[in-house]
Image 1 (tube, rainbow, N blue to C red):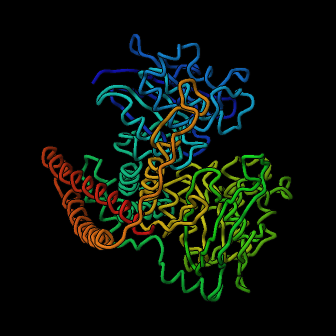
Image 2: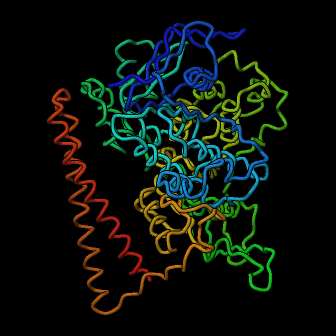
Image 3: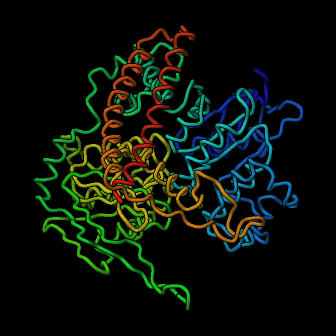
Length: 620
């Protein structure tokens, strides 16, 4: 395996602390490395050192001759006077970039909704971020350093980026180093993980799931991390094994000892108990949306309507203890739906019915709960709240909850205004929970949190006995803390029994029906781009309704697919168990089982696509 870049004995020190001390790492052809660690431990600094943007105090970074390096910072460096087109492709002739399949894929995946002739200065922060990422990806680099590339991307955009990076280089070539808190993305693209902590870089084999597995084993063997932290990692590992067993097939080391750790670990949530507790606090009625529609006025002209229907005839009866994730593209109406539930918006038609004992709280992105206490110390802020809180069947003080969320004793005397973004986010959540709401709405709660703190927050939410509604582009979080998902699509609310995968399939199908419309997964020219057609093509009509013999045949086929999917699920589970018990040193045998597993999963994907097509026709 050819060497691309190496760092030897790196030492970096700031006036108040040492960031790295004698760190040596290397990047070889084919490496796909995810970087994790607590906020402030040096993840972004590491990328700057390796990319050559920052010089170490001691040590050196060397790269193979002619190796090209590309870097995405957390803050873009785009010239605000340029147009979007000039910022992405520069002075390259149109026929050159338009004939490059990779460039077209990048443009369709990231900037399809941004006008080609728009000025960078007029873009929003999220649009600038996507333009900066597109400008990097259209170039041909041997190594890519990406610092939080999933920021400002929705679930479709994250899925597109993962697929793009996996096929960007031929197998065994190119190098990728990515810092992100998106754990699904880490698992999808990484074959190795670097944990940055305590001035060092500790390597692990595999993606996030494999990293958790090895970390639990390391903690057990070395007994160097306190029991509370170890128990949290065990709980995370238990969920990974139950919820996504395929992810743990990546590591090539003996896993029996690690599995013993979770043999008696209960599920993350006792769903029955939580629903019983929620019912006792809420009663039978929570929030019911009954034939609700929301129409907003817009500026119209002679040919366009002067209103926009955001939600149409929504009926949703939210139950006590329900834990629901809400998916949808930006602008689909997710925030409107949350505002209806919270009572900050009245419907245009229909009605919203709330139970008498309902107390709703919203974890927003603006940190508004902290505005009045910015000058107060953390200890003073929590002292004004309740003295105890029930979590996981145990009474805990606010101080213990703060410790559970990663605060140290010394930080209790810190003014709120001096906390980091992630610390403020955790304090905001704690203050909301101490007010004892029984319905919690969370709007993009993962901002500013590292992977450890996300796990701590999820652990706290596991024991919270209320109704939880989550809107997030973090797929891992949605699958981890919610039990069901809905999608806001075409002004309607659609239940997703198949979860996020079903949502992505529906979006792909929707793009096909719209003549290959601007879905992040399909890829097409950005709005206003030279060579792009003036319209996205005639919109495809809905699948024709079925009747008579065709209807009966479709119903029979759906039933047959359901039965086949059930059998395939059992076969996949059996293969996972066989793989987990197999001798991991027998690479030939492991590869054979993995191929069989991949074949089953491919058949499942094909059947699910056919099931969705038939379901659409039957619904019509």
